[in-house]
Image 1 (tube, helix red, strand yellow):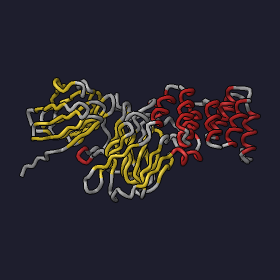
Image 2: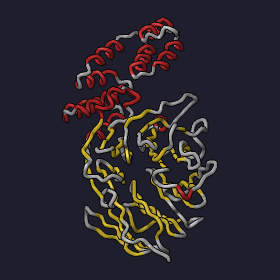
Image 3: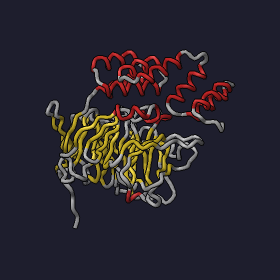
Image 4: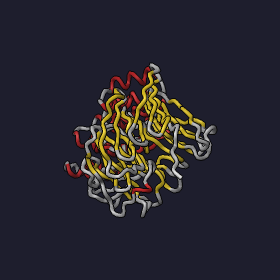
Length: 407
């Protein structure tokens, strides 16, 4: 028996696409009610719509449509016609078939084809593979505690070539989509349903894998800013600035948005997180749409371009504690202590305001930097920095304050 699934739907921003026949798709632009029909030579096997592009694979060819122009797709031939997964990032997309992983640009050029030992592509799905502009992460099937991380452009393993290893089996992985390559983060859920976050770049030193949530069923990163959302036991949670765990751990609970999730069934999953619009599929297949505040995404934009004055203006306008907490963490991460001081004062963290004031009075740049590291809890790095700068007295002073007499 051969069967074809019809009436599949894909949605992105103002476009809704449905597969109406085996070889025909209907594109509906909801803003102006325009309808386009896309005809294909062979039957449609897989499709994906994201980042302004529709990627469709038939049994012989791959079609790439831009949402700006539906009339002239880019078409290239496929080696194998059994595409089992299409993943998109802003600059390129990944095709997975029986032969391997292939990364293509939206112009149809093959960029790379990453490989790892014992690769089985038939069992890869969107929960075990994740793609961003510069990084590709794949969960190993043979050893479920291991995640292989590749440079997307060269297809080679990142850093020292060692995969990321966790202590228990991993269920789902996701890479953030925005920001610098050096700050790329990966979030993953393990078998105990705990949510962890860690940095992808590792140079010799072990990056801390930090737990930021428990009983998480499903997660997704935002497509335009590094905001993470997930379904926790009985609530829907948004981590407006997950990087807070590396800056000031106590601040993390203040940067969360939580909503009662009793209307979701047990096995709900996050389908997409575009702009401030989240789509969740319940166990019975019905879709739920949620909206979150647009302000944290705007704040991420300001922080990325170091427009701290605008960030302060936004926080004063919105008057929301969560937003102030995000601004405080972003400012410390970017070592803008003046903004951090104002933001901490706004959320009533007086002890931190005093500490930041004492940092500003320090004489040398190195000691200021070391105390910022110390503020974020990176005692080892702070000490190394002071010793390299020859500030041995201050390094001893730090260890005395930490009651670290052995050092």
